Length: 259
Image (cartoon, rainbow, N blue to C red; front, side, top):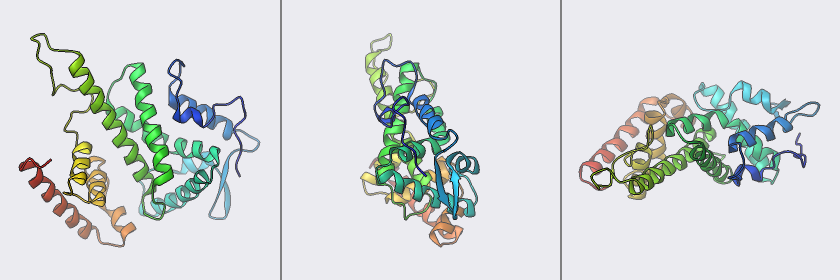
């Protein structure tokens, strides 16, 4: 079941083009839109396991990383359906996809650090823009759809933090006139943030994209190798060995200043 957004509610465009003079951040617009879509008597719902299930019930059951292998398989099924509807041009399901991922997007926002209101709006916009781009491009046949959607958003936020930090460094010289090229924003991300290092390693051919995601998911996000092994039809030990080989190549590249 799908519902159109009433003309008086925030449209899907509010998720990708935020009005800088508005008093509320992009995530608030998203929540306003979802409140309309999930209202009775006809809340937005999806057929899952042969049953029509409201989107709020799907969110309550859990569709983000950190679940058991069985739960991850069920979540992949949900995400495959949601992304299919969004890619078919149903704006309501584009909004629903972003809202289902909102707890993960907020965690990424917090990792960027304490922000001024304008910076907070910029980070939220970066997260939503990258997430919506991934909604259109992520491979729904591969496992752990939600994790890969959130990784795309996380990389965008870390790139924003790096740009913001660099800009502030050059705009605000230290009292002795030197420019603090290594000074991070408060609680922010240094130039050598692991996500950025992993991305450079992929571009340099040191890591394959799948190896980058494996290291990020199990090291940076403290995820387990078990769900990845189950999804790939491998043993956890084999996945761990693959990670170890990739990390050894990455370490050599860093020591030799190849990244």
